[in-house]
Length: 139
Image (cartoon, rainbow, N blue to C red; front, side):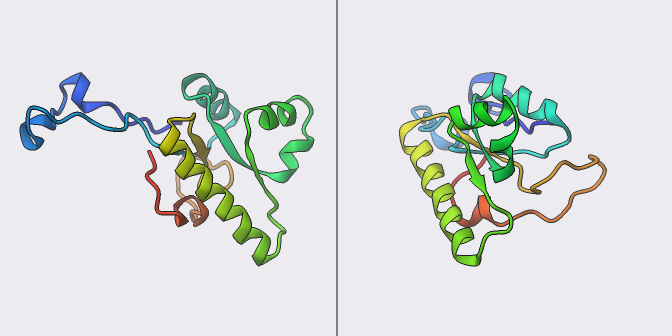
């Protein structure tokens, strides 16, 4: 399941202009990062169709036939879960820089599953801190 934020200004469901003035226009239509829960592989396919994002993924995904090639082509960030503290810090910096770059350039977002795994959709497991460390906007 993907969490999708609707555009309240254009849909009329909640017009912010009445509080921010008639000349107010949103400066950014999206964010450089999308955060979603991960229930199954269909989440990834749906996200590719709707957002065409890059992903933050475990490093072993690179070795998967077909899927690994696609992940590399869409410029995914690969994390080694057994990495040292310094290597994890460097990976977090890469993600932070990518988030900032996506916001500044309007490039396709990076999609992060903060739980780091698929879940049964009945409970939430502990979020990884990485997606939020850079204090960039997420959707």
